[in-house]
Amino acid sequence: VWGPLSDHFGRKPIMYTGFAIYIGGAIASALAPTLAVLLIARFLWGIGAAGPRVVTFSVVRDTYEGEAMAKAMSFIFAVFILIPVLAPAAASGVLVIAGWRWIFALCALFAIAVILWSRRLAETLHPEDRLELSFSRIAAAGRAVATNRDTAGYTLALTFLFGVFSSYLASSENIFDQVFGLGSQFPFIFGGLALVMGAAMLGNGWIVDRVGTRRLAHGALVGQITVIAGLVAIALATDGRPPFAVFAVVMAGMLALQALMLPNFNAIAMQPMGHIAGTAAAVIGAVSTAAGAVLGAILDRAFDGTILPFAVGAAVYGSSAVLCVLWAERGRLFRPLLQPAIAGGLESAPPAQ
Image (cartoon, rainbow, N blue to C red; front, side):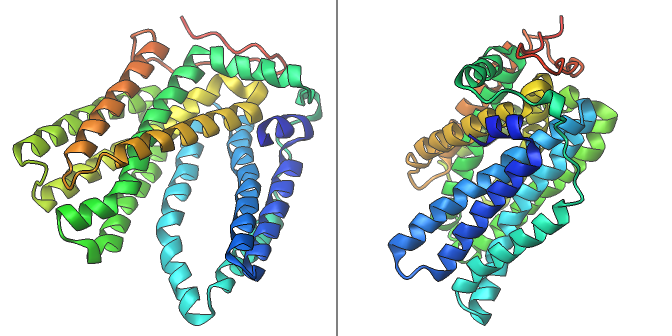
């Protein structure tokens, strides 16, 4: 919903509308008298949060292309990864000092601060580039996303990568507790591995200028498959219970390589979609996140007290991501990034020959 709206009304009005709903949901959560009201308010909160998320990627696509876009995506993904790591510790501090309602109240205050700060941001979608808000136009934009080989292929690859990542998020506490007996140290281990991922994403912004988006993304993809193959071999050799140090090193490598793929895959998928950046960002984000969560849940349910189901599942999903990329690239990896689509039309840019 937010994507087509931002393609019609512009980025900033939709961003502010999303923030307004977000703030309303946060305040309602802070004042909720019952659990049912809290859950409804949290649902409203999530709807509002989706608006600025879609607009963020749309603004980046409006403003940048090629390697510059991949570099900007790196910093955005780094924030998305690091904030959830830091937020629980911050919330715990607020909980001790002021009580749980203030956690939600501070989120509302933070959103207000972001609104005031974002007034410096210029509107990136010019009036002449805005699209009609109609079902036929939205359907045409959806077809453009689904039928562009690069966008569709890399969106599917992102979905499988998110499947691995969401499975790790869901299974990691059980793995560290039941496999390695380190449940009490889980927050520190999880936070340390997340910092590795965030640091790699920040480093991606520097590396992509020198290596190129596709070379870096494809190299990381090959590297991750190699690391996952090693994880499967280790799991088989140790009956799914390897030494913790070995598992931690392998997971750090996997997460770092994922950090080099996620922003770059997203940039490649968005590159041909400059003319419908809002709709494309919404579709890519919704498909990869929702379907990836389903894939992760399937893998999470297979947990049997060892790392073997996770390792095998990561190998299956990782191999599927490779196949999606090979399909998108017609079997040719490490090509230059595509030229952007021509603004104003609904036809997606054809893949480079």
